[in-house]
Image 1: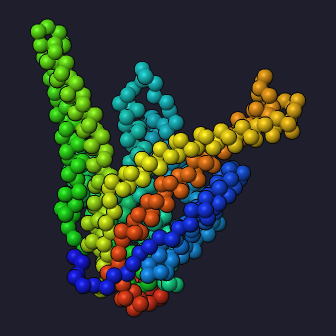
Image 2: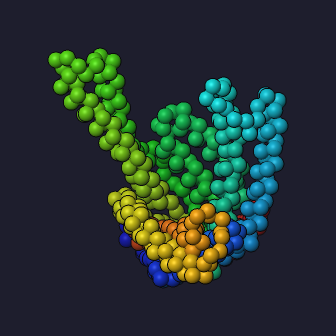
Image 3: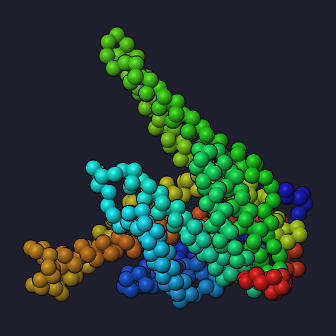
Length: 408
């Protein structure tokens, strides 16, 4: 737990919206022009912006990743996935099945279900392995005051544990979700480093159960509403002397199902926020560096709702205006030219195509400005580092990594 009267390292956010807007427009356009190839460099440039915008005691973080590294990693992942799926297809062929077979409505549904689950179970280790590797790469390319973060090579261990915990959570109908959350976070945190200092996740997984209260309440309301609706249709047909009462019960049950479902999904947002609070409060770095993070569920939901509303209103208008202007201009340039759109004038056709492209660009830019940046800013503003002066004692060289073969 956090000790009293500790020195606090202030975490801040100094993002620049005009700079982000320009960066988002340029990188999105380049990604479109290069048919997606530039997205590796685009993501790198955006990470550099966000990393440098988050500060600790006035010093921004530094992201040193390169686009070419991400491209090479992607190509390797594609090759590995192809070999992996090829091996799986060979195994399926012995059972007379195929990854590419279609199961029609009159076909063997059990066969289709088995194929779906077999594919998921076969791909799950690769998915979790890739998640850990991606996190490890991101940490190894992150610095603060010249000192690099890092993580142990433990991707397969994480993949095996993730599969086990997900299966336990599924078999227990979500009851062991806190255990899954805590154990997987502890596995990652205990293998994370900042220079010579190691992170440690302390606490108990049972402490996450209070964060599940809204999930449980939403589920309970939905189940009660569903039970009322089922009993109503089993025992009556909404006719006769009790028709009015039955209709009232049906309306109440339907309302409970709707409210419970919404409550259930909001409960997951609450769980993610409050489990983050609890886990952060029980996380340490080195001998005595501790953390607190107090994000607010209402604030995060509000960012997504307000941001989504603004995006849904602005994106079509901006894209329509730009597409219209480009259509008028192109009609002057392409007057009388056949672009293969039937009776549609060339300028109008080009304007429609450019309008769709513009819509894609506008959605990407507005999402970064109205959702991603406010979320990162909120988390930065509610996070504090206790005993931050001990960060000065952390060395750049991770001696233990060289002694035991850990690669940062």
